[in-house]
Length: 338
Ligand code: XIL
Image: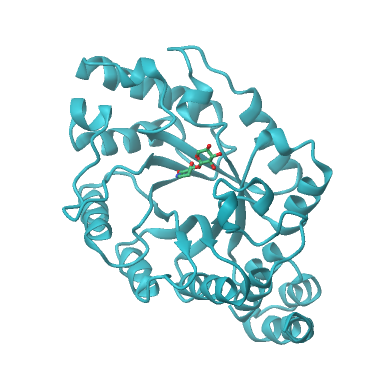
């Protein structure tokens, strides 16, 4: 199975490049280098990324795979509120700066993650009880963090996981929601645009890959933002999925968001499982993206199963020894088909 797919892949890039690339220079590049995820994705102008831990940049096997295969880098934890501002007004950018510098040295774009999120939030924020003080803290956090990285972050996940998972798909009970109400999300977007006018600003969440009450609620929010001029450019679908359970309407759901005039991104893609079933599910999820022209970025939640946050579920494209899994081949193949 792997051998024959590999043989097919060796032939396909040339054909794909000739079909999709209208100019000769692009066609040559694509046809000679589409043996990696990033090059295969670039044939159709897409980025293929991974979440990366700064502590792993000293691991040669990890870095070799990262640099060879990926064109976007998301700091796994190093830009989260508890990491960059553990105490009020005292900012720590050392680890995030290392990641951004690494990305730049490799020509990777950077995805900032995440400016306002209920999780990995320091106690001094969680324990606030004054709306005006919380709003000041949010604005100050965003102006410092987005300002620090201004010009170096291509996409910001501005607000993450604002909705809960109940069938009502209500707003999640967080300190932001309790003290500021629904408006906290748009406040975060406006503050980020002011701090970094060039970054593309995304809302991100999980369990919104298919049409369901939660994705309906996010859809309504994005539609409202677009109608009122709240600065939102993209929606991130985290895509923490399970083999055999990729929503059948994922493409249609991505398309309905794209029709609101936002880009759509898979921002933390990983699929629990193994073998052919996992490979098929990966193909399905990646195909849902490539069939939507405004689905321009696919980012995995990590590089290797060895360091995955779902380690027991082996959800990534490289095994713990950095071997390419069956799912790697299926993703490469779908990317090349465009
Ligand atoms: C995870 C990280 O991968 C882990 O290293 C950390 O311990 C917990 O957070 N949704 C998100 C991600 O937006 O930032 C989370 O990442 C996974 C869930």
